[in-house]
Image 1: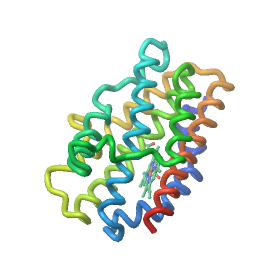
Image 2: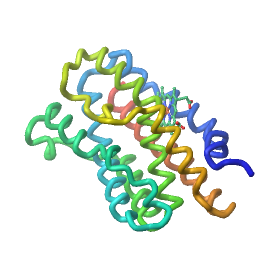
Image 3: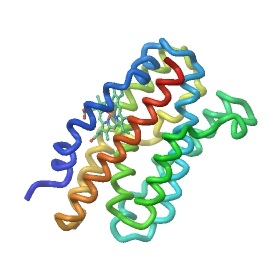
Length: 209
Ligand code: HEM
């Protein structure tokens, strides 16, 4: 039997490659874009994580999804601290969701609030990405924009060892007893989640090119 984590890795090969081609992310990593572009990325993340972490609350008693509830991953407190630093105390009135972000949030609401396959798909795509390429990106941004102590908590997962956490997460995926059809639904939603992320990065790229 093929492990679900192996199916996920294989299934997302092209999705990952497409995501990694983002010129917006590359521009931030090299400090080529204005600092405000970085703030705009975190603002979009706030809308996305607010919806995703509401899904976590909604799914906390689901027998499968509850194994994918990790309070140490919650990003909203970190994002709010960063946005306060980047936009000031009235940050909430200064940030708006881009159309692609709204589409992403709508999709999370539709697929991740009452189906474990959808919830885990959206959960793993964001957080495993944050604990993988996201760690590299955080370091690059801190360096490129000379951030000191503040404005980058989003990338810092207190008490989490990223490689170890990713390995444990994969074990949890492998322990899920999903039928073939459920696994397929999960993988399809992971691809959708990648596309939604790529669309947000593309729209940010149009604003900040
Ligand atoms: C320029 C942008 C990006 C870069 C440079 C980047 C970089 C990387 C790298 C180096 C890895 C580890 C090697 C690999 O599995 O290929 C990785 C894995 C991953 N990335 Fe990205 N990535 C980017 C964008 C994204 C986006 C937009 C998403 C979606 C939210 C994403 C989600 C993931 C996921 C889910 C993994 C797998 C982690 C695991 O299974 O442990 N990445 N990324």
